[in-house]
Image 1 (spheres, rainbow, N blue to C red):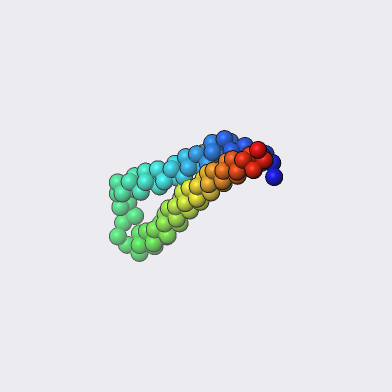
Image 2 (image 1 turned 60 degrees about the vertical axis):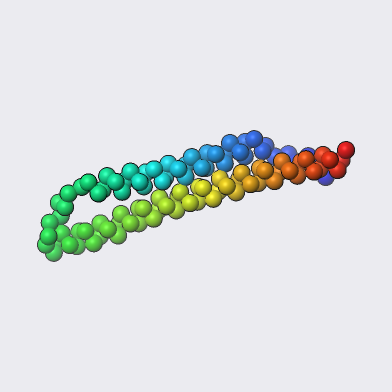
Length: 100
């Protein structure tokens, strides 16, 4: 078996890109949670206000769950791409050694 025709450097760069997107999703989530804590209780303390906050809580939690999913998905994808690049490098070293 010869050298594998895979751009391990580009894979490593792309893995770092996935990690960057993951970190940004986490930063956005943290920023939003902090900003929302500083908002007042404009909805009031009546039936309409209670209905609003119930819907609001579900919607905001869905948003945070989405951002957590993006964070985790991008991180795991980056880790997988980096691992694959490392394995390709090792394979090329082994294949070169066997061919020599």
